[in-house]
Image 1: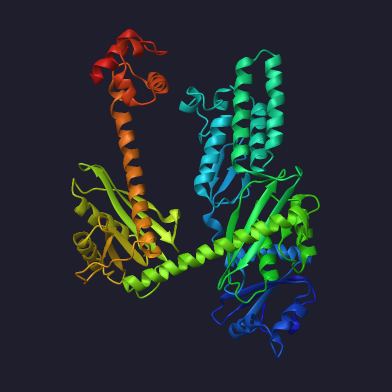
Image 2 (image 1 turned 30 degrees about the vertical axis):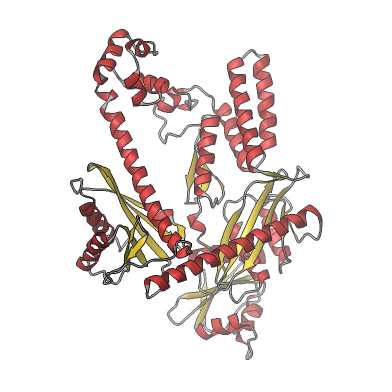
Length: 583
């Protein structure tokens, strides 16, 4: 429980956390201390030498404090409170929630899922900055190890019938055998590929000795798949026992880029980049301390070593805390020579490159503001598109770019209700439905419509009808890449090699891709639902058998009666029904 006071004089000489507030009772800063009274009194000196302290105290009105049993407890509590309240003057790990994690659930027969929400249940790996890559990895592991994907284990499903799941729901695999598979997946995300391959080779030899040749062949394919991944994706170093995270920072004007490269079993297994905001008045040492404190605070692998590009204050406190989390000793080092120094320099170089890329993107947004004569820099841009075939399966898409990068959390599909084909009216419906969601989905700084004067006029009409004419909107005509803006007869032409135009093209193309992908998905579902399911004698099992053998509806249409009759579960009469249906 916290205690609120106005002056530091009555603070205890004990470790704890102090919470500074302004006159509106808003938390503006959270800090930890070995001695609360000594630390907080330093803010109340007549001469404050640090600009950050001067600014902080100019807004200070009151503070609360929480006493802890040790400085380590204060460190943990400080990280928790910063994550919860995100005070203005604390250095913060920015946008951490946008990154997905991979979770092994804690069920009797665990599943492998991708999530952005962390709870106390299950084991987590991540975060992963490349959502597409992690989806491919999870898909690969599910098919490789044939673990269950269903939420409810209520009988053998399609995956078990096409040999993509061991069907624990049907008792085809024991709990112990399934646990061994999950352990392999755990090792995979820890980067212990050599251990997995070694164990699999042992299992393959045992299966072969027991004349379980089919099982041995499956394991052989698993080994081949994992070795292929190892060859393609990871950089080797000499020491096979390395378990490290390499961290480096690049200082920007208002934010800091942090790069972290995990090394497992002597291999670089990835590279993540993060932003630390509120850092303009803090030293590199303070920024690095805050990053380590906030990054490792929630369900992350703690390595044996953390390599930094420069030393930090209170290193012993962090090492003590990290060692508790890991269960054995963790060291934080600044290497001076050899492979470890090369790794730190590599991370530093990557951080500088990302900083430069971020600066380039900021410049392109500023260029866009200049060309379009906007009142402010368009940090949030939305693009819209319609996809349909002669009005069928008509869908609309909204994509969102934040600071020049796709922000998929704010993408949205719409099933269109307007009868078609009428792309113009459908776009009007799309914009109207989207803009009515502004209370739950904040308005953008710029709207991009695929089209010329006519489409732009329609969009302006929607904005006027909803009293939202303050939102800038443009039409981007594809043929000559002309940009149409309201109240201007002539289009704006941005040079073809200009980054600002490239960004607009990227927004338009992404909205088109997102719309057409959803359209194809609906069309595909309709095809599969309206053909095989309508044929007399074709039930679930026969449908699965046909699709497994022929792959697509089109291939089934081309098959002869004899080819159809050969499929397991089929007979001559049913084969004739299928053939006659399509011919």
